[in-house]
Length: 353
Image (cartoon, rainbow, N blue to C red; front, side):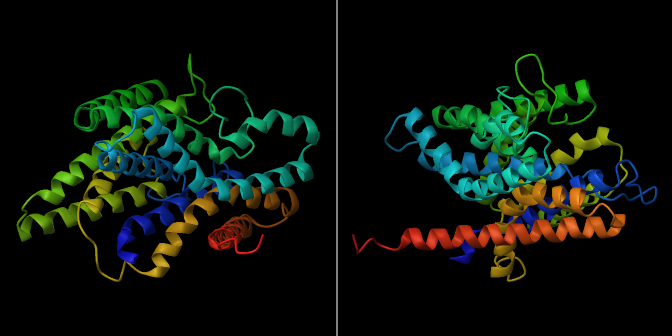
């Protein structure tokens, strides 16, 4: 049923996915020349979209843990099953992105065998474990960091949900976000290695935890008997949060305020999930389709960027940015259609042996 998904969250998935895509495209094409005027830039802060995906991952993990925490089965088995289902959701799109990455590597690397060998861990979501210093699909650092965070957080939610979601999550996330801001001035780049792990793993762990806290608070908002005025105020606050987050992506605001925006987004996630949105503006097939496209577009963007960089460098900046976006969307749609066809074939019963 259409109403099982939150349409507003789905359209935000697409918006922040495109924000991340244009952030990377802007870095490729414009470099440091992305400033438009004192108030706007070309998606120079678009990477904040990754924090949105971390928040959603934490929120949905907490929702899942809350639902099954009192069912039969060990914590280890339930955690394994949850992570496996998460990987199975990503895997079809990941395989297509890996194939595209290998083709790009074959076409544009100086030594394909060595370059591919260096990047093999990335094919198994291990690029931020420290096993290798090379990425097969650079944007998949987010998936690796997310899975590492969930492997630790999910069993804690199952073991003691209230303490983890309401006490540990907000405290630990705030301390870790504060540590990262104090150390790096903002959320750290994806390639920085701390003493024991990549800094982006700490980043993922912190924001996924914050997403768990968002779920706990959203449940309390859902169960509260709010007046019409209170509901109206919360709707206004929710939309302000998303306006701030979207504007930040295209703004020239100093990056040291990035942590502020993360908390605006967390509040927005809490309020958006905390109410039922049943109008057709958000809950319709187009919106849900765009939400589903966010993952394949995100994973296929590197291929689009490689083609434009290596084959079409004679294009103007504007045309390069446009073509990267169009190619990434087309690759994403193609990936989605292939994966959907595969699902259809998998559902067909085996009547002939």
